[in-house]
Image (cartoon, rainbow, N blue to C red; front, side, top):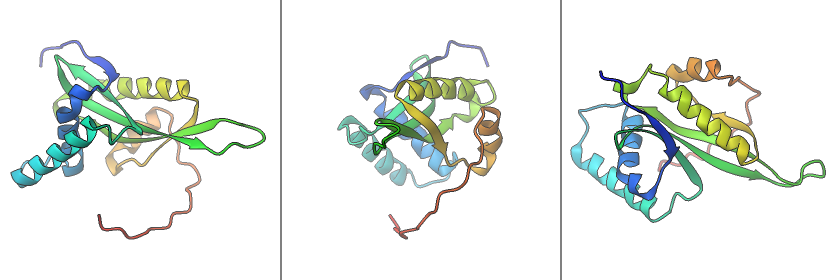
Length: 160
C-alpha cells in the first residue's frame, strides 16, 4: 500500500456519513454478511442525528487520508460537581475507537489517541476512561492506561 499523508482533526458536519459507516463497522466487527437494509437504516439515522447536532455532547476526532476517514475516536466530557478543593473539574469518556482494517498497525490509532489526550487535557479533563474490547487492552496499556478500581455498576436492563 502506497504511503499517503494522514491528517488528524476534529470531525465536521460533512463527515456524518463516513462517521456513520465507521460506527457501523465497529459495532458489527466489519462483518460483511449483514442485512444491507439494516446497515442503510443505521447509517442514515446516525448521519441524520449527527447533522442535526443531536450528538453535540460528543467530540469526534478523525484520521483522514485523501478525504476518506480511516479512523475515529469520540470523547464525551463529563463535568464534575464542584468541591471545595476544585471548583471546576471534568473527565473524559473515550468511546467509538476504530481504525479501518487496512490502516491498522501503522501508528494511526496511537497518533489519534495522542490528539485526543492533548485535547482532553486542554478541556480540563483529569482522566480518560475507556471500556476496551478484549483485543484492544494491550493498545491502551502501551499508551499508559491502567486498570483502576472499577466503579460500582447497576444494570438497568434496557434492551434498546
